[in-house]
Length: 142
Image (tube, rainbow, N blue to C red):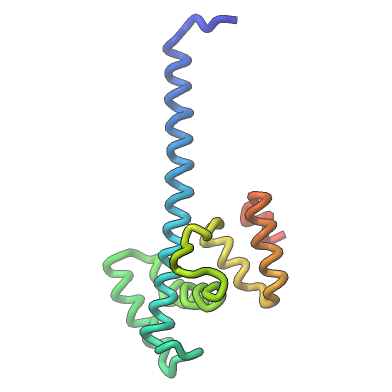
């Protein structure tokens, strides 16, 4: 069957190309954000805590840092989210080096969800399954 209206085909093609472009941009944004949050967590642990497990007034440092970052970069930098970034680094730093940032293949929300899993082997299982089966957050939480 031949398409009689080339404009229809052209219009649909443009929509599909735009959708593919948006998907690639979304994936790249997710990977960059995750790597960025890892680096921010690393800086908080290394610089603010001098590598110690806990800083004496770490909570106040996060609150002060959050105020300044939120003013300039938006609400993604709440004290709670900065604490998640710190925990993200502490959880994954032995597994991922700075030179391998492209290894973050899941979304930030996936990592937040998996960081709740205390057992390292269980967490690794869910990381692998999420990545290999392209699990949504809902599927992961189930």
